[in-house]
Length: 444
Ligand code: ATP
Image (cartoon, rainbow, N blue to C red; front, side, top):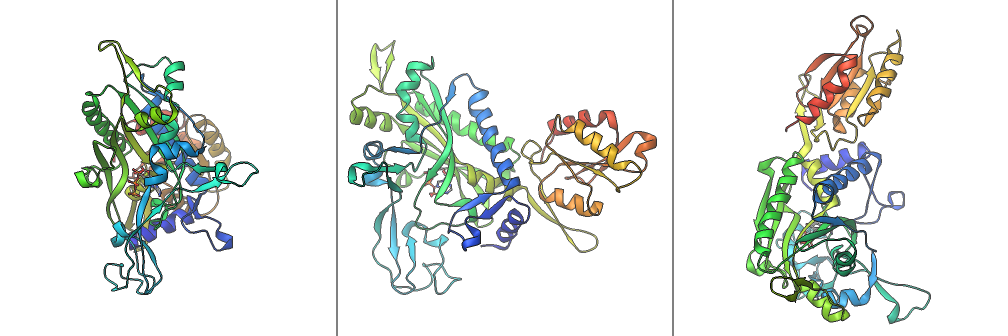
């Protein structure tokens, strides 16, 4: 792990964003739990995606399908036979690696070297299926096998007809879903970057064959816009088109949205043209019609599908990495700040009395009660003012209001800005509107 990544990970633990899973029992590799700050940020990310992809659009509806799905779904979709990664074993260090991601792995003996550099003795690659299976019901036989979904998309495809029949939608339209997915990854790492249990935000957009390439371009642009809207800096995010040999067998094109993580550029979202592959297969496999009536052509047509698919956890890590900054203070100490977009900040406004006397706590509590009606707020009266600012800088709080000795005479508070460190005096009855204005015009 690079130094900067280690410091981001340390901050996530120190400030209650992310804890290692099952930690008091020594941890369970590649599982992480979201703490009080983390659960807020994660929820805000998902809500923002849902607003942008569903609520603000006329032509996208939502869905929440089961995690456990019938084995047949995954046989027909090709996952039972083909959702594999190439795996190799090292006879020298006993490590097990993903053959196509060797540069991201480390030798178990020569821990600083990747398997490309350590000179180990490797087996030939063999295919390893990434799906977790389990048994449903009390009879433990093959017929009881079910799979934990490795992507949320199939839950959407198998409900395509239900939604068409009940939601008054017409091609072109989309179905969006946010939920857990599970993959028995051979190599995990980058903290929440690659885990075995994670969350996805996926939308399947159904359109007429022939219009698919135009829609693909549209969704690639829309998704990149969302990332920029969240405040992710342009120089750190890019769209990379798949080369023909990288494309999944069913895909006609795929653009990966990549972020410049501390270890280099890596995928955070894929925007794929999945053609009519999935619906076509499920129509064949289930015997149920999954076509729509094209009134002009006067025929039944299986739609093409454009899929923007983002990982919630990777999005979380991306936002943290992009927001993280260290400054050296004049006294030589380091100030760590998260420059989160105000709409993603778990705490948007901190309210403090400068000291715990002279009526300041009462005034601060009254202001806190007022501001809480409009913003996510935190009231803190303990410790030095510097420590209180430092703590809120590390959880990305953009504005702090301090009630001081002058408040009693001038009826104003000091508003301190996380990004510029400017401090301004604002009248108590104007603070809420002042902060709302600043939030609405915030840019990175
Ligand atoms: P990778 O090659 O990095 O394993 P992928 O191409 O297999 O990813 P997709 O199948 O396109 O990933 O999944 C869509 C999104 O889901 C990814 O862009 C990523 O954000 C997220 N994702 C996939 N696998 C994981 C994982 N193991 N842990 C966390 N997020 C994941």
